[in-house]
Every structure is written in structure tokens, then in C-alpha cells.
Image (cartoon, rainbow, N blue to C red; front, side, top):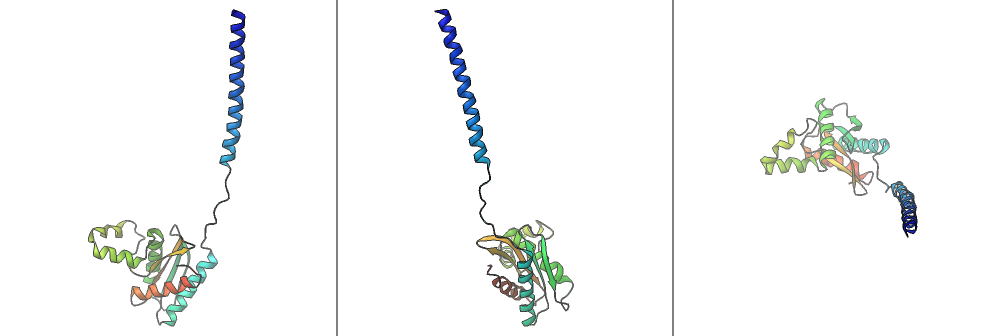
Length: 178
């Protein structure tokens, strides 16, 4: 009887080892299959060509409206893609347009909305100090393509942020962005 018991234990251990090996290999196979990248959803991108089209359309609209401005277009991270300036625009418009673009891309809101929120609730004033690149004055809009924020546009130099914003909106409409 003892010999049969040993044989059964050995057989059981062998069976358990075989099952374990198959499990490991099959699990490894399944895990490998799960790790394979799936086809990513198409994420809209703000290309240099689109950014330049937005910037030039915005600059031209402001020029037609009688305003000498600078226009900056940034990617979703707030990094500059392109910037244009009317030669008659003040030197400060370069920084203000970039700051407005950065702020709207970073915060996902228009800079006018952020400025209004701070005016209505002074406790939010600390937002102005979150990042030295932020400019919270009207004239910055997030760029949204196919429902996804891909960047921001900032305009500086018109005699009012609402006018900067109107020019920026025109530029966005030229590529079907919001």
C-alpha cells in the first residue's frame, strides 16, 4: 500500500506541475494578448498648418476691424506652435497673446470667463499666481476639435479683450474648431 501511496503522490505532483505549467504559459499568452496595443482612437492634433491658418485668419480679421494685434497659438500643453504680430502692434502684445493662449489651453476656459470668475469671487484671485505664464484678461480661447481640447489661442492688442476674443473666434471658425 505504501508504494501505491507514493505513486499517487508522485502522480499528483506531476499532474499539478503540468497544470501549473499550462496555466503559466496560457496566462502568459493571454497577458501578452492583453498587453498588445489596441488601435488608438483618433485624437485630433493641432498641426503647424492648422495653427498658422488660425493665427493668420485671426490677424487678418483684427486688421480688417482696425486693430493691430499679436496672435499666439499653443498646443494642449501650452507650448507655442506659432505666433504672428502686426508690425503696428505694441511690443507688450507678444507676451499678452502668448499668456492668454497658455492660460486658455491650460485651464480649458476662455480667459474672459476666468477673469469674470475672479471678479465675482475674490477668493479665486490666487489663480493669477498659479503660474507666471498665465494672463487672465479676455482674449484667450481654448481650441477644441472634435470635442477635445487641443490647444489655445491668445490675442492681444485690440482696445478691449472682447475685441481680441472676437478675432480669435473668427480664426477658430476658419478650421471648424470651437
